[in-house]
Length: 191
Image (cartoon, rainbow, N blue to C red; front, side):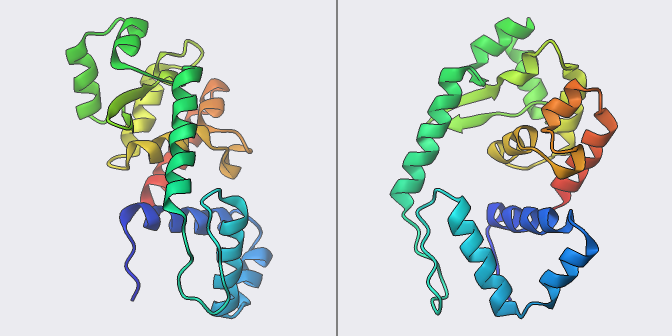
């Protein structure tokens, strides 16, 4: 039996979920492949689309990961989110929403809002302050995501989903598709 850390387990379940969004014929074709062939295809696909510096070698049981390159890429991407204002400090979110620091802390503890870390600093998604989306609905969706890590929740909200007609959950909420986003969040949290 193979044991994965929680984040890797979520990644694997997400890949399975993505594959299952296609036709039954496509899913059946994948299931009909020998285990080794499917594993090799999955590893090669991951290596092609990731910027992790992963190199997959046939016959090796584990890929080589350039951790420093991955960390540098992640840090650069997260710094860009700060610069673009997509994630903000608690002070900026408090001012934008007219909340007290205690109200913000209470929302995070109740899992209605979440934080993300960049280095040692804590940030909040700026989308909680968007005027074109009902914040209460965003908070309800956040609560459905439960104990998932902050960056995993961020990924949910900002990544297009086939179940939402290739829109991100934020775009779908903007379009008034609250029930569809709720279903997507529940499925994502179960993975």
